[in-house]
Amino acid sequence: MKLSGALLTAALLVPAPALAAQERPPQTPAQLARREAIRLDGEGRFTESRAIWQQLIDGAPDSGAKAAAQRRMAMSYGFQGDCPNAVRYHQMVIAYWKTRESAEPQNAFYQQGEMANETARVCIDAGDVNTAERMYRLGYELGNKEPAPRTHPKSLWDYRMAHALARIAARRGDKAEAERQVAAARRALDSDSAMADEQERFFPYLAGYVALYTGDLAGAERWLTRALAREDNRDDAFMHCLLAMTYERLGQAARARELFQKAYQLAEGGHNPPAAYGRRVAGEQVRGS
Image (cartoon, rainbow, N blue to C red):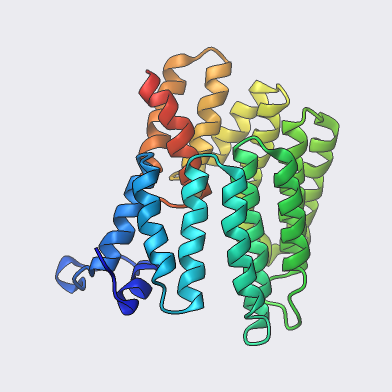
């Protein structure tokens, strides 16, 4: 299916909030192609999905649309746990945002940091903690280049950096460093109530993640249960996977299986690191049961 420039741009737009059926505009061929590629990534049919993403990249009508498609391609590799290729495509997106520094400096530097963090998340979830650390540090550096008046405070990047370093230390088995970084994350939250309003939801899962990967299964169960008790976390596939892994290690196979199944279902239709992890890791468990 050959897509026109206008349709390619439409395919890359984030969908608007759900409308009543009679109010919804008809789906364009490009939007349908984008939805199909996301579905194929979720099913692990990467040759087919990437052919669509590549068509969107090659036929993009402008550099912004091309970068949006490159980001989707990066996440396609994230669904496969392919850190090097995710980094490669995310770096293309970062390069685009560098060209926007003069026109929209606050957003451009924030987006550069976001893209570095997004690919770091893919890498740590795939087990490549060294690359993850390198990209998280890059994200911190780029995000903090945002000029005044800043729309994203330094406290946000401090929190994200401590959050990342705690998880990385936990994956390396360094419990003391992980706990030190958890404390740093807590201090960052407590230093900025406005930032914490949006970011507090990610703290219980951090504490649970560190507990899980440093062998404190009782602590992991307690913190991850608390994380999922929050209304704003209840549809998070990644957090469901973490609690499922905790129950698996506790020998509670039935509870683990139930949570893996829910994580797999919650991840359906998503196209971000939590969805990629849910479809890949939970999917292995669901198919193996």
